[in-house]
Amino acid sequence: MSRLLIPDAGPLFSLAAGNLLALLAHFNVGITDVVRDETIDRGHRPDASAEARSILAYYKQNPSTIQIFATQVGVNLAALKAVDPAYQIPRNLGELSIQSLLIDLQMKEPGANPVVLFEDHWFLHHGAMLAKPCTLLSTQAFLAYAESKNWIPSAEIARRMIARTRGGFC
Image (cartoon, rainbow, N blue to C red):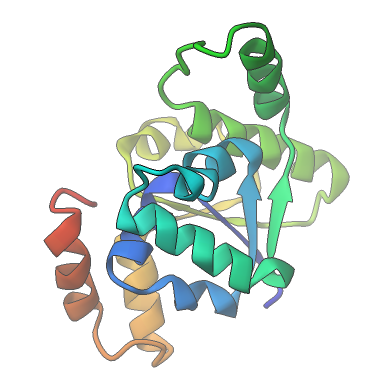
């Protein structure tokens, strides 16, 4: 558990949908404040999805392996929401908070090479602009890696389990 795994919201929901959140226990997990709001905190809502509730439960059971990082994006969002609780959150704020965290890590720990776990095309289109060094890992590749480590019996079965709930996941 040496490298930091930074998941975006999509992979967390996919892992929850496939009952695969336990795979995170193999890593030091860093979640940005914005992604926390989109995932863990969503599990507290009365209308929370089963996946959001699973993510919240996993976090409550494993607080020592998951670190929440404050980001400039998250700080600015909190300030805007304090003034206007109905503030409409722009698209891609979770991704931008991950970029903010990568910049912070680059400045504080220049040798760090965190792994960003993603699903959406934002990371494919903007990956060249991310603070380096970092490694981008799709959920699909993460499942293949988990299979290669014998953490799961089959990446294909895991993909099918996820697809039952999240049909369009990448």
